[in-house]
Image (cartoon, rainbow, N blue to C red; front, top):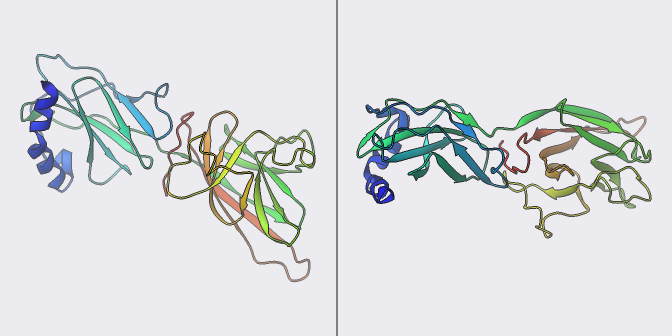
Length: 260
């Protein structure tokens, strides 16, 4: 029954969405929702699960879960729910807030917000002189580390190397264990949009992709990264150049969402 009430509020939702700052333009008399958090145990893939402290059921019919891609801007309704759990299938990272409703009344203000935003990896610049270069992602330090992939102790997550006709490719860490013995069991994919492929998407994940532009890395500990690879113009004397790699890591294990 309460979900039917939520459906009947589509007109109210439309009013919210049409306002300058959507949900926050119209306020009511109900309590402000507290205790909002991302449930990191059930948030995974492209599915974000948000929980909050339930209000007295005699006061409210349910809750609106709102989302927006950045800290500022208009809110979009993610879902309406009777309980203190909201699920959102997302196409990028975002911020989330909650308002309670009862009939056409709603919370006096938006709850505190939580988010799924990524952490920026420090840019790395590495000289490239035709020899393969390994890269490892330091999760704790939010950085990229370059090293020698022929060393069994380096344990790279991916390798940038040239093929026999001089084209640059990015290889997953253990793509060629006979050449690069310490590589981690990672997966690599070209990037289209802001959602990394599912782990079982064999058509998207591959041993290697062309270097240049955005690409996804699935680490062997179930964390995901979105990186961008470019390079500088070659030095005319040495004919070497510099690989430039930067990107972001999703700090929620198993979540595959990113943003610009």
